[in-house]
Length: 451
Image (spheres, helix red, strand yellow):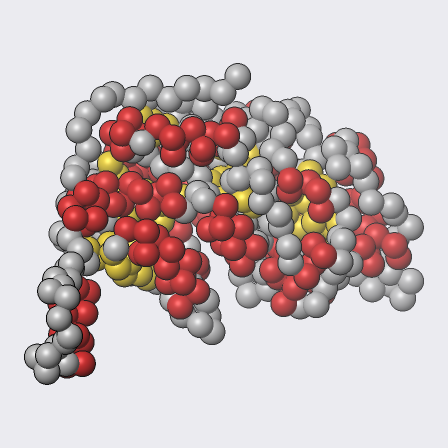
């Protein structure tokens, strides 16, 4: 059964009603127009009409903006909303170097009083936004527009519909999500005499593939089997596979120094040490390594599809990350949220729901290679159309799927992980000491920013 959201009946802001009431109406007498009604006069009236439209500022990540067309595609996606609500949407682009930087810049805008009415919030920023009071709950709007909530629930997987619920209140509506899977270079597998494993392959099978795929080629050249998961999001999936996490599920206790976490860190370090995986290289990313055949397997979400398309590389397959002690599948949502400082609550909340509509979700998911939150959206792109193996894996979210961990202290914890992981992979510190030292730093971060 679907979980029912609890909402309190309150009067929502009347911004939207005011907009709809502000329409320029013409007066007629039945007489022919005189010279006073000139093209110049009509132009002036139109100009006055436009000036009365509400302007809704929507902050988005620079990663959501087209490199060649700028904000034009995003503006076009909001065109229907503008027409429905007699308003204008202004896209505010936040350039950033990773999500942590995006969140920091968004916070600065809001604290300075220059915040948007609505903002794109990555999964990583959810609880941080709550702790800082940056987002307004949608419950008031939902109570006034239950039909919109019912439509959202009808087409949204159970595990996603309340993904942005905090303390019984809904702060965002997922319009897409991402997962972490294992991508395979089919050419490397064929040369090694290996078949594509089952989607839910075993840990023993994975270790066998690592052994075979790291053997020298027929000319004696070195080959690597796997690009190790060297950043927060994908490493979180591996922690889940080992039955642990950065923290416990309540974000109260740091578990990065658990026995299972240390075991995973040692497994990754040994893969580098034994020539199974290359040392992580920021100048040669894990996506390009797979396309080039430098590695046979890498970890990525559906964003790998766009990378394959741009490189005209379609000889790929995708399976789940092998399960060591747990089958928990990770996901991370993307959504738009209402800024708590907005004076246009109704309009901003209505826009949140607009971004969960079929047209919006279908276009955005296919353009950005995200996974649609709606169950009635069809994925279409060159790689998918050519039928890479196991493409159906992105059509459903397994039962028991769990969100990527996004505590209030996300930025600090992700930075601590990056430093610790790099030090361990470079052989500067042992896996055990790396996990233990990082865990102590994480505990300090959680204490400073508790959930």
